[in-house]
Image 1 (cartoon, rainbow over the protein chains, first blue to last red):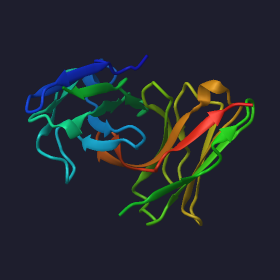
Image 2: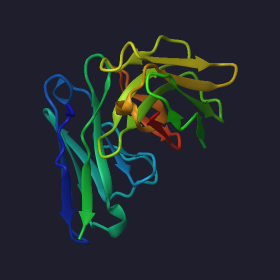
Image 3: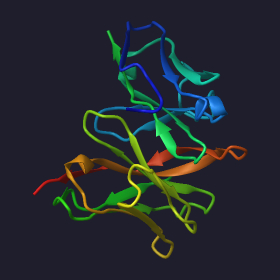
Image 4: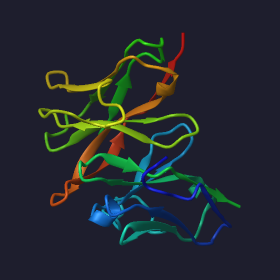
Length: 110
Length: 123
């Protein structure tokens, strides 16, 4: 049972926009700890997609964007492409700076 | 480019100790911290712990007492030991180099990861 709650799955057709939510509490995201997002393909290590709630590392397409409000955060993907099919994880912290992950959301491109 | 190379056995017997090593080929600066994260099949990512080169590790409370991390500065290697393993410790284990984003809160992220090591606990 993850402390950060994500939907198990989302789906969308190519070209569409999808969002993945990440719900925390006043002990983590709501306490002001930043949210990060990772993309993971089968058999590979997670890749950093968003840091500091909204920032993209170099090389990450601007189709990916992050937002945060209160104790929740969201990852939006616009112009969905087949290559975006992966599992997405949100990450934040608690007051002890333990690293918290969401349970992961599998994105299916229809 | 940061390259993290993991090494260690892929099969450990129940009740024994799992040992993994992570080598940083580019000798990252001391400003970075290092984490171990594992991924059991069919489940989500689980953070095991984090440390800087010269500070005491910070462990996931759910694993505290069974986990030990260390950094060998002479070899630039980061190590993990998990004692008294059971089948529940079967997972892909990753080392990762982490960077602090928000110095007010201490919030950090892990941008560079090792290739992952599948560790199976079985007799």
